[in-house]
Length: 302
Image (cartoon, rainbow, N blue to C red; front, side):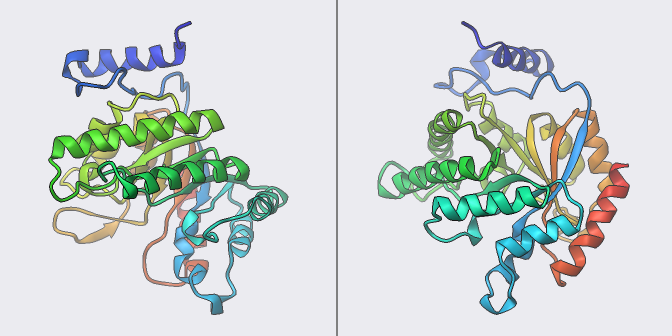
């Protein structure tokens, strides 16, 4: 039986982009399209544990993932993003279920998690390790009740052509997406430098991955062109998750405050329904600064 969800996504993509099957990279059976059937926008707020990175890496700070969850509750958020970097190397089911319980008791959803994978490696031990790590975190996410994992494409390796690097990344994503679907976890590709530094580069990969369990993690601070907000608008229809940073920077690398209202307008136009996750990367104590920016986000989305 045909997958009607996939067909609706493909039809939307074909009509709006004018691409034909022949314009896609050889070897991709189906192009992933924008997420269909979103009838009206809806936003929920969350906070990425990466915002607390310096505190979570400092044993003297007294801040743990449990502390972070409690802080998210104090900010009256809808969710908490439990970034994988601050977990034990081999988290036990008991540890994962403990965090899940802590979030539930605080009235929070675990909005997602994130990993630092790289699928640009050629076949061999390094690539096998990246695939295995991703699959392990898909299992962890399922135990946490995290519906989505932010993933990376990776980087082109020495001796590899751009075309070969692209194929390796697409193949890696296809493999782990197949596994993710079996666990009921979505994978969201982040615009994060390298081949995903631009909307066009990100979508080139997205269009060649064949999975209903795949989409985009739109990071508002990771495009650096002359038309940052236009690039955000290009990828917003594909977004499964959205990260918002407090600054953006163009080719001159000069940081300017993010236009939060403009970002929410872009998400509204795309009928985005899901979490908008603050990821605070600037100087200052995040326990003091994050609540201020959460309030600004609430005002912008009102």
